Image 1 (spheres, rainbow, N blue to C red):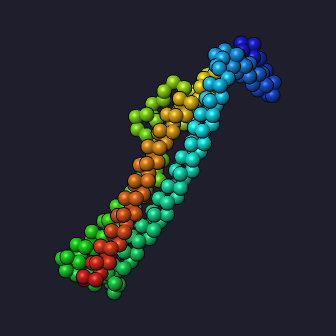
Image 2 (image 1 turned 60 degrees about the vertical axis):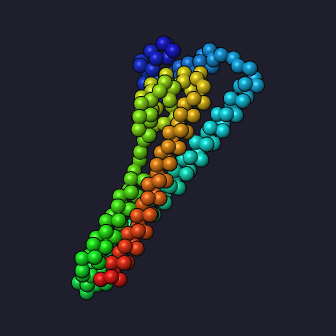
Length: 208
């Protein structure tokens, strides 16, 4: 490892890169040799568990993309509804002639509900972290890119080749599930507020 580092600093171009890569491979080989040997049955069971965890991770990532797409669609529709409300409020329009305390109050309530629905949709699509756990990395956390950025390449080689990935994968699955649950709740609330806003606005038009 030391000689590879010296050559990498002394040479230029491709030879420096190759030397450094050789050092990383040597460190990884040494880490694999140092890894404690497990019973073949236990090792096979652990490999299956790791594979299952990665499949769950991919499923959660796909569900997150689906929820984000729904939230984006909801935001587009709610923004269009707000724009239509402003347009219809003009002189000579359907909502322009709304008068009276109750109809005007209903109209404002509908507008507020539509605005709230848009805010909830934005909150659902904004990138988020599971506060408290995702911000502070635990030893061995390598799945989330926010944790990976703190690693040194040499230390990451050892982690990838020597340490068991199942604990950090399990923690990441729990974090992703919590974030996905919050996103889904926000989208539901957004759609409910939009429907309520549309109904209240329609009631204001009929009453006015």
